[in-house]
Length: 538
Image (cartoon, rainbow, N blue to C red; front, top):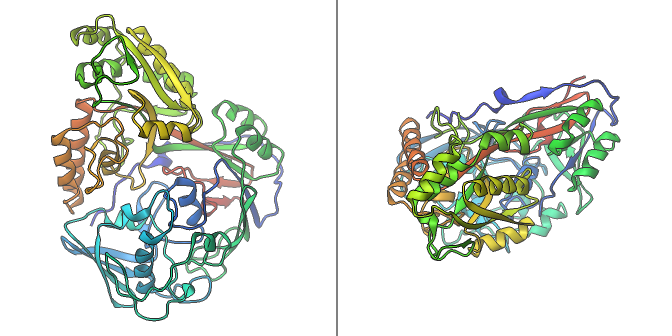
């Protein structure tokens, strides 16, 4: 089976080398200033970027994703479909957990059993395991997984969660898998058990060392790692969520590396003798429009919901100068977007370019749609979630105002924004989506498929866009195991939603990292900051 042919972010990455500074850290120790702190070290508690990045140091997956989200062997050395609903995974032999217990297929079954039983999970990983109908282990290093129907995303989805040790959690007998509940698993470890280190026992390159919330997370080298010796004896993550102090910590030599340095500081960082690497991410910044409520709460001057009319949606898209946003707001550290996944990633359409800026055509379309004088609009946006999010929203507002849509911005903190968005308070909002699976089905299912809880569709479709033709193509793609055929269907589905202006992509973020001389970091499309990828150069 062909693995996903994803974007070669490295080809777009640039390492901008500046003069030399002396190394502030001991050769075997690495300290990273992180822009966000995980909500827990439990690998299954919260499906969130900072959590997912952190768990990879300790808990590995059967299938790994490299920096370009291409699938690589991990705890499984190979995988293949035996038929449309049966997959065989051959597991790596000679792998031990940090407590010395051997890794077998039983540990994978135990892990899948535990995932739906994590208490108070704010964002469960069950979205990535619910396709699993049955699991059998004919021998300790062979795993057979059954699905209800053809499910080509299974190898991708098993790459999103880390494997626990059954033995380290007190399970010594057989485990029977069941969708409604497994047998033989006993009591599952609690989230606090991972935060204290008691249950933080994986097969990863690093072992749990210390966790002090708000201060630091420390990992120690796993000298018995199956994949070779880690580059660092000790890795310390220091959460420094404010941009200024994080940059200051780097410049002062208190940390070796930081993620997400503010764009306006990149030149200063380089001029101070540090290095910056940056690469195209899988995160698209987009505008979603309320396409259900009438009247819709953020629109004035009309009792109708103008965004139900495709001509208005197209006019809005044509009124936005994406090149100017990238150049002036994003400092060139972004790429204008023509669909929901960057070019080159699985399911993206070759040659799909961003909408051409044409304010005159936008005015004409608005008049044809019955809005020759435009209307009033308030855009909702977070002001601390995405790179320059509020500034981008403000730029969009100015552009829409120029074509007659008098627009204001309601920018609030991310926690408030998402709560209000989920209550449908915005007629238009700015947000972002990073594709965890690295293929087009991720944004299509989440952002524009008709909301359907049973099918897991439209979970983040807060514009409530609905197009039966699109839904049918997504259904077809997710039932097609052949990668070549599935990619063509996904491209067709993407074309349907873009032609219908169901959602308006603005740009893809380019993610920067900054670090001292003597180390390198290869940009990752998933924006994860991993000590596993920090390499010494001397």
